[in-house]
Structures are given as structure tokens and as C-alpha cells.
Amino acid sequence: MTTKTRNMTVSGLRVSVVRKAIRNLHLGVYPPEGRIRVAAPIAISDAAVRVAVIGKLPWIKRQRASFESQARESEREMVAGESHYYRGRRYRLQVVESAESPRVELNGRRLVLHVQPGSEAPGRRLILDRWYRDRLREAVSHLVQRWDGKLGVTVNDWRLKRMKTKWGSCNSKARRIWINTELAKKPLPCLEYVVVHELAHIRERTHSERFIALMDQALPAWRSRRAELNRAPLGHASWGC
Image 1 (cartoon, rainbow, N blue to C red):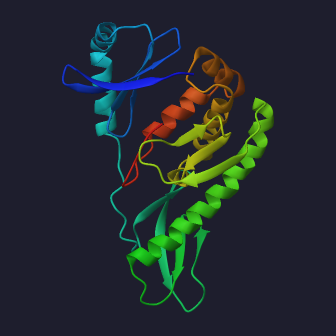
Image 2 (cartoon, rainbow, N blue to C red):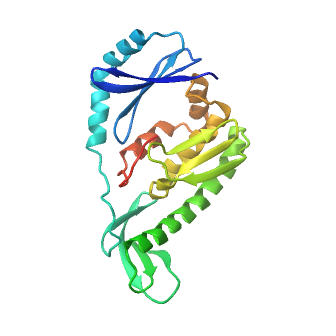
Image 3 (tube, rainbow, N blue to C red):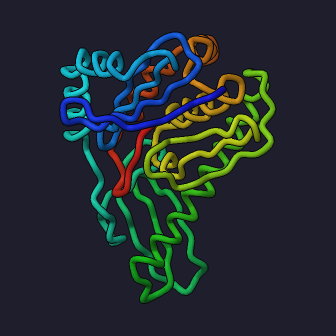
């Protein structure tokens, strides 16, 4: 499908306009900064796009205001007592210094980080990030195996990647999907929504009516899960989908 992207300014707002071979215009506002994106039919003029955006200005401003007020995590110093999230739940960090191999474990509502004596924040963060990645890899593997057959798609490859602006992405031609590593901290239903969303793009590249119908059929509660994900506390370096 041929696409063409350009930016325009409407009432002082930067708008990304993507023209595609679609029938209807779609406007979205995305966290964390309130990025505005319009998917428009190729034949629609810039003037028509501007009119559509102006007509939605009150809604756009409400969406951006909600993102600005959304809870955001401060940069973690990796010291005992600070909060960390895993699968949507908040845990208090407990740091245990010992000569044993570094590891992470959950103990009730505590996230226990075992580190070498004298370790500093960067090393501690690396241990925790690896643990998050391993747990996320296990969850994504299970979800891909569960959903590729249900959606009737074949996935050649899936990968984990830290992304600043998206929860996930898909290369439909290569049949490859990427999942944001930050999703290890979010509720499992939200992770499942992102996996299903990206797998569905292997069948339908754009957010077309057929894509929406596929999502509605496969995961009827996907809209509420997307809303939950976008309400969740944003990471120190965050994104949206």
C-alpha cells in the first residue's frame, strides 16, 4: 500500500499527516506528549485535513491535558525503598548485598535485588533490566504461540526493543514484530493487547476498517485494555501506542 507522510501546523499544533489508500479519515492523539497523527485518504486535500483537525480541537486539547496530568515515574536511583512496577503491580525495592550471583526475586510486595557488595546504580539497573527482559520474553513467547494460530498468521520473528514512541511495531512484509521492553511493567492484559495488535498488522498493515473488525473479533475488550495501558504510569523515558 502506497503511503505518503508530511507534517503541517494547524492552530499552532504540529500534525503528522499520512495519506493512504483508505476511504475514511482517522485522527489520533498519542501519549506521552500528545502527538497528533491523521491518516487520510490520498484524494483528500490539505484544506480538508485542516478542517477536520480544527473540528476536533477541543477533543485534542482534552486528550493532551490528560496525558500531561498522567502519573510519570521519576528516574530510579536503585536504592532500597523506592517503587518499581512489574505486571501492573507496585513493589518496594529491597537491595541485598552478597557474594552470590546477582539475581532478582519477588517476595510478597517486595522486589528483592541481590547484588555484589559496593555495586552502584548503573550495575543494579542492568541486573533489573535483564530480569524484566527475561520475564517479558517468556510472556511474549507464550502469547505469540497462543495468538498466531487464532489470527491465522505466521510470525517469522519477534523481538524485544526499547522504544520511545510506541508500545509495539510490525513489519508485515517480513512478518516480524517488536515489543517494547517497558511492557514488562504493565498488566498482562495490556501486553496481550499489544501482541494481538501487532500480530493483526501482519494481516492488515493499516488501521483500516478490516483491521478494526479483526481486533473486535479476536479481542473484543481491546479498547478498554488500550485505555488502561495509556492510563498507566509512564516510565522515565516513555511512549505510547
